[in-house]
Length: 175
Image 1 (cartoon, rainbow, N blue to C red):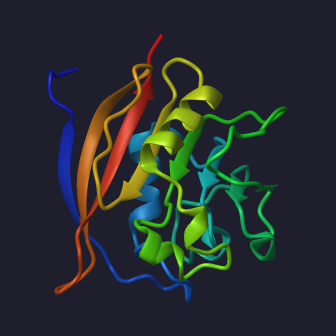
Image 2 (image 1 turned 90 degrees about the vertical axis):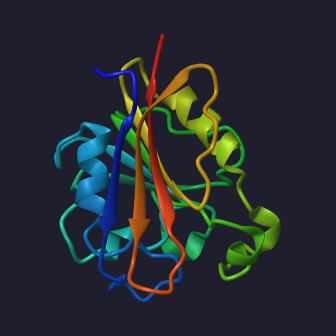
């Protein structure tokens, strides 16, 4: 592998899911490919929102969801800022799409006080992954990973004109 992470730009369609902050059209299958997993592998979707309603390819039949909002009926209903209780789950990758700011967090049932810091999310993900497994994060920022994760990909994500770009960063668990 080269000394630099994979870098790219994706120009995607607006979300087709009527939920604030839902994935852009075409995002999930591309994100999954950079996680190095197939559609039959188990991906844990953290701050999952309504990912099960995503109308495009990318959500696998073995995928699991984690969210603090019980009305979304996630597989794991818990505060994502705390240590994750995902025992007995064969997770092969983690994909996170948290609120990007406290202001964005106010749009959700859990409220602005539940804003999860990206660095803490990466630490929590590293705890549930094995060496060689990956975590992806869609956010406005490119967070510095903890010592047991290395950055392997960085993608700018655009959804039409006059919208803020997002960054999809992918990290791999190292020994």
